[in-house]
Length: 157
Image (cartoon, rainbow, N blue to C red):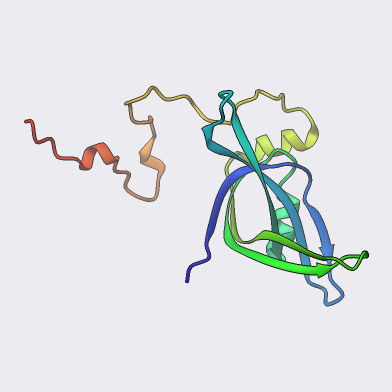
């Protein structure tokens, strides 16, 4: 059986930091993830995914992210239940984060934290003309970059 989740999105608010009686650090946060398709009105809808991260990584995460941070995460889905004050069973589903990656520069995150970043309404992505591979300076990368178009054989030639 496989239980694996990978998401890319933005933090909806500042991460919430907790510490258990056993000294385990826990951080909870919500990731806003845009859907790839549009609804009937032509708008992209957004899913708000509850996430949790444990241990030393939790403190690293909380100290290096802020509301609006663009992140990639991977982990697993977890279902938990508890009884609320009214005696009802409450179920909660969340992504337990194993790994995360910052998808924007530290300067952008610090600007957002300082409140000096202007909202542009777009992600920090350069527009690319359709059908053209992105321009990437490959000299500084520690691996060889091969574009899918370079791997295709043209049967018409």
